Image (cartoon, rainbow, N blue to C red):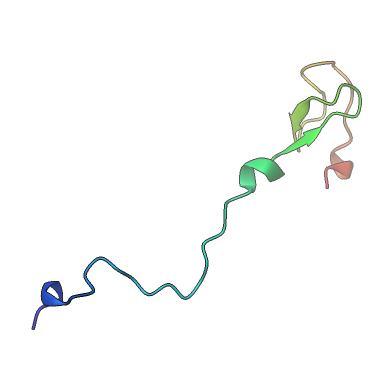
Amino acid sequence: MSRSSNAKTGRRLRLFKRREDDLLERSFRSCPGCAADVHVFADVCRHCGGALDVSLAG
């Protein structure tokens, strides 16, 4: 008996719920000077030129 003859073709048993990937959200933070989005490892804001503390990127 082949798998294609199974009535449940195309359906899978899902044991775990798939989560949204929040990597993009975790990659940016707000600049304290201008509130623009900056990368978490940036040391200078591209928008206002303000210095950013990388250790506070959490």
